[in-house]
Image 1 (cartoon, rainbow, N blue to C red):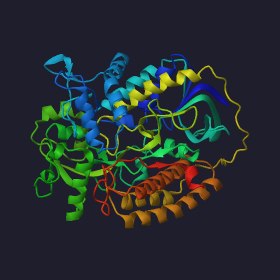
Image 2: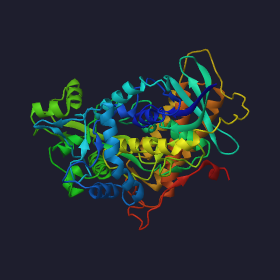
Image 3: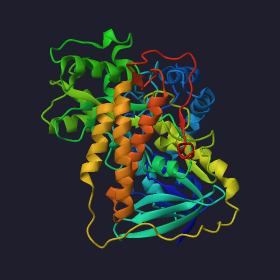
Image 4: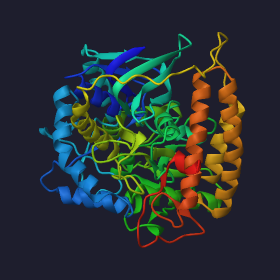
Length: 523
């Protein structure tokens, strides 16, 4: 039994920032599946959107967010986030995050421009923003005696008592091959997204939707899972993991071209390459399907080598590894699963409908992103909600730990080496990619539903009868995520933002959230 005031599951920007805040007054158990630095935050290239330039306004940032969100954003939530952004950014700067400054004026930040933004407002550290933030937060975390770090620990299930109060989680200690019980007054899910539900994704391997799946299984409301954002420009290489080419590259003038060199974005939006991500991704997808090709080109050969190395050192180096010189060569790119706008439904303070359970970051659905996330709003949302969860949860610290419900371990442990049901895992990811992709249809959704239902029964049986491994935990979770996506997509009888159904090509006049709860399906 490991007891603490807070149990924080996840070590991206949301989990780390929350841990630093709550550790001022409380004890924290911080668990992460691999090393502390393994997170989507570490991979983030673009930056954090924030109004700091005199020519920019809060209202313009709010409106850009609402426009990208295709009518589904919660305006109050968006307004609060944008207004709080400067204070939260200053906290990061005080902790030691170094955002890139202008070469000719070291007193001002070099603000980037990305799709959907009407002004330059992206604070960045070249194209390594997430890595800079993650490393800085970890440095501060390691100095704090109130935070106990549990690396190589994978959450299995949340612990909920009969009064619908979350008491912590059952956790698999990967290296010790044992089950541990973590009890806490407050549990926060900051587990990141679920890109590995899809065959092709910009996400690291850890992104298996653990927080969303765990919350769903205990009765949390899950919202808007049909809205899966596909990043328009991932470096295309056959039979390798996809590497993200930041939206900031288009913000600096890169042009999308077909294999014959012709441009095409003008056919889809007046903003061309700087249109919101859903429009750009759908445009590329349509061109690829029409021509039966695997990729288009991203062309930034208009910029010289010195500019490219200074602004995009990470992308420049990665492209060179594949024999692509950005100064001379166009980059082959294709869309890949990237970010979930849906997740565990939360209120303005990060609360779920289960007592003492919070969610934040990509695990949560706050209403900010609506039907399509505006670029570089995700890291901002994470630090804003870390602050909100911290302040709201203080009222629960004086309470004693509840008694845990009686428990007989249903998880099987084996001394044998870890194994994975590879066939089932690949099947889930192929179903998601083939039927729950950028463009959907009623026919494909029905096919996906039947396949996922069959697979869910098989995977649950395998989980119950097989020894606990990280792979089995993740397989159960991505299967759950695929099920949530298809059920949400079937409910939405329109096309809005990231959800495009060829059978319902228009947008309904009234925007509504899609809410799914496991208790409803059991009725």
